Image 1: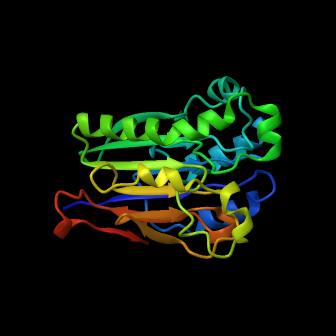
Image 2: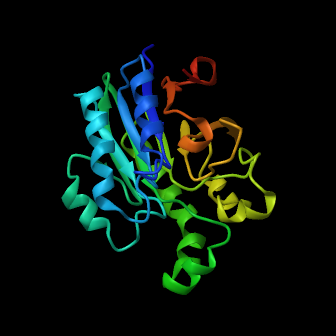
Image 3: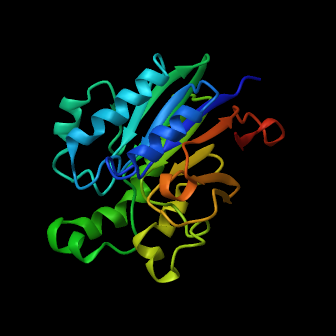
Length: 246
């Protein structure tokens, strides 16, 4: 059974970690089937700084589809500017996309994600953010169920924020609620999703963990020091399920 190869990275904060990203990209020796950007691609909404990131990916992997989710550094309200400037990136903003990769119907749900505690700035500047974070897990469950309606062979959840505290070791426990949402683990169920990838936790030392028996990867560039490469096979039964790092 063929495996998909997924390349994933977040927290490039271009131009801050751009040299590290370019070095990591040059060291990749496999050809991924899809490349996923997990938010905080740029620093402080510097929309132009995404250009060298995207160009480097396309020069390295000419025919590989690139998907992206927004992070907190891609400011809310500016999504249309990213769509217009980088239309070649399939942006997923609480949305799903079904694509055929190696003949496998692959459903990818993309989101900024939720936090257990919004930052004080978010509370002061983003109307309705508490309700949004409260309701998002249910919305994501609905999108993942739609993936099943499409009879997807593989379902992936790509989030900027974390979906559990279990792979945040290395971060101060006091800030865990500002890095992830424990309630998002309601969506991380083996009958709904095969793989979860996120970023945002720069200092977390755990690359992946299991949440409800689903692999959850932290692909934050400062934490990993590289683009994360993951192989995933269709999980038609527990016996033939495989998700492993490369």
